[in-house]
Image (cartoon, rainbow, N blue to C red; front, side, top):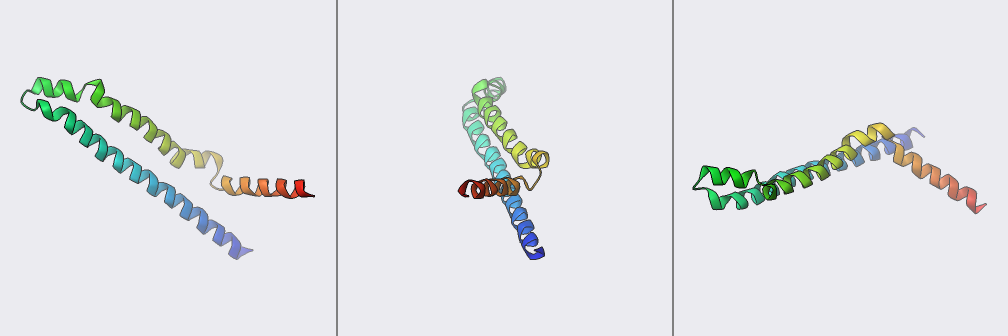
Length: 107
């Protein structure tokens, strides 16, 4: 039983690390892609500070940062906050519950 418990803990730890890895990859891609998009949008007006500033702070430039940023915040919530609210082993508990229900319905 102790061996199975340690295997279960290892699987949960691997799952959490994988979710963190996906979040940090998402965060990196967010900054790289939005920086490139912003660079392209403001590169036409590098001769005038006022035009550059207007392009940099325009809604069309900031919209990708804002919309994708909201999605990134939701992703961060699911990785960092939600597991502590539900408990780190909620997936296992749900699987166990469904397995028990399945066994009861087959009888």
